[in-house]
Length: 128
Image 1: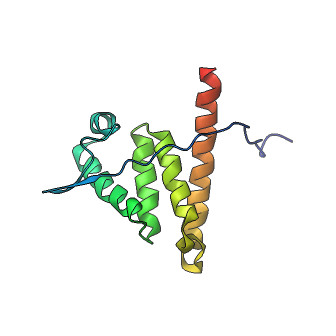
Image 2: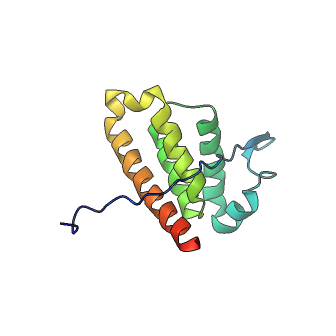
């Protein structure tokens, strides 16, 4: 019965690099990175500033799941599905993802990763 059990699409998804902000006098900035123009054009300024701080946290591998969840959400909202998927996978690769107090967040991140994989597979399939 295919009504409630969707079959996962098969496809190879290449990992995308996570944009790493550089230090500036005002904090962290994505200017000068390849995805800076697209992110600046698709996110409000406040969300872009938040994303820059969150991506710095991802780069230094902080142990807080909110950092990864929110960064993946903002990247997805900006249309950067590949880096959003990489952020989800970065959380799942950390030892903190297996801590009992973060079990709920890890499950939510796994669901987000599955949704991103599905969207990326459909984008790749439509491009071919």
